[in-house]
Image (cartoon, rainbow, N blue to C red; front, side):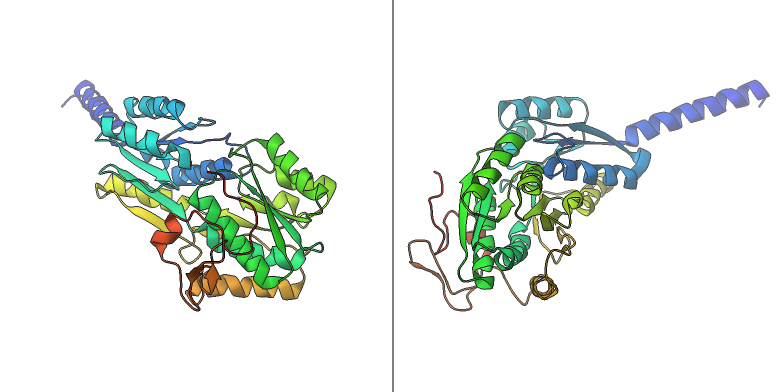
Length: 356
């Protein structure tokens, strides 16, 4: 073989190798409901996606779309991603559930993963975290830290995920401080910093001095930083607000799950599953408890975390009644996952109605 033939063969081989590598690359899409710099939910999903990309390097092509409204716009974006050759698409907001199912039917060879929903299909998995475990710990700290005995909760949408968080927060704040009351403001949005800030200020004006949030931005903490009061990081650590007003945080740890599911696609072992992990599995994290929290309260909170992680304690353990006083869980009885997955009522002691 002469030199020209050798070079040609090498070039051909390299070309084929490059082609093979291109074909072997796994294309992974992510769709976010907010901007990737929201400081909370969407940013944390984005950062987890980047960790997944860093893990796989050039073996993965990452495509992302931020600020996608839930509904028809989501179907359009998902369809475009599927048409562009995506092998796996993560849809990271509850309201993407039906759009995900609808688009998945049209692209049976594309795998989909929907966050915080409950529907599956042969090519659709769902995944969520037991956020209520972290909110039990935040509730305990809130109950101990309030001076007015009034705590507030900024809620997004009246779905079981959010209702579980409100109930868990109240149950454990009440255990820590029997005099505590909890007020809820529903915003019907995941991400609207102006509304989140207004709601926080409205609570402060009512004498509430500890505010928790189940929305996606840092606006509640920013408002508390200016106006006073305590709060918590939501979905992300939000450590830039520590030691005050941020007392601690509930952190969603998605990166290990993303790596596992992309690996499954690469290995050809992906199958539709429903995943619901918590503190024990590392999908729910608790941020550093700040120096604003007394040592004895910090120790109690960490003990609660350990008890949940070990399985010695479940945040929904009776006796617990429903809001109207009818029995729900008897002494020592633990709520089953099916009931929690569809939870649509407040526990006794909470005031106000859940929007229908």
